Image 1 (tube, rainbow, N blue to C red):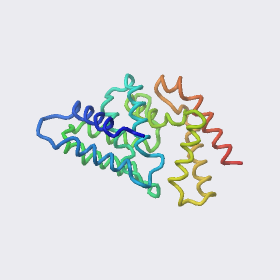
Image 2 (cartoon, rainbow, N blue to C red; image 1 turned 45 degrees about the horizontal axis):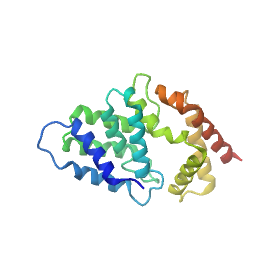
Image 3 (cartoon, one colour; image 1 turned 30 degrees about the vertical axis):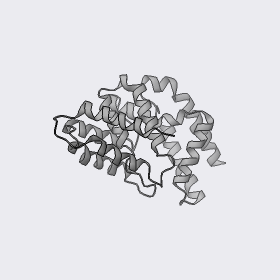
Image 4 (cartoon, rainbow, N blue to C red; image 1 turned 120 degrees about the vertical axis):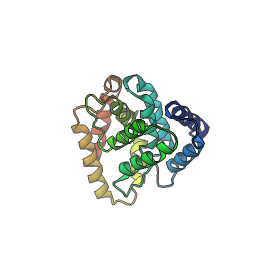
Length: 214
């Protein structure tokens, strides 16, 4: 069970650390709006649990980021819009950040960076010099390096989100996603992720792909 008050506190701490000026709306208004989005009924994996996990991983990796708070804000927004039957979720999530953050007092340069990072989660393929992107993408993909039981629960939750897709079509689509990930030269770009998560994640992905192909 995710502690909503703890998440609100994390949001408040991050927002207050980056925003400029003093006359802005109550930051809790934005926290509540985001938390409502992350609790929508169509979500089974992309839930508050995922949000909290990504924020935890960003905290673990923050030393590798140039702007850890921008990465934290991007974590809040990266799946804020999530409809499994739509393909533009990341773009719409980035657009939401571009509308909400300036109103909340976040400067333009930080808002632009947050939106860029959210859009980067389409490919999870940051450039070699993109330290913020590497941290966000590693934090988002860390679930791939979970223990077998946790990974199995993750894949089951993803399937539940796509319950409307016939089995054969889902297996083909999911296999394509797995192959795309496995074809990346590296799944994890931070030194921590490369050392701690890469081998386990590739083992999990390969095992799932084998099951889907059998």
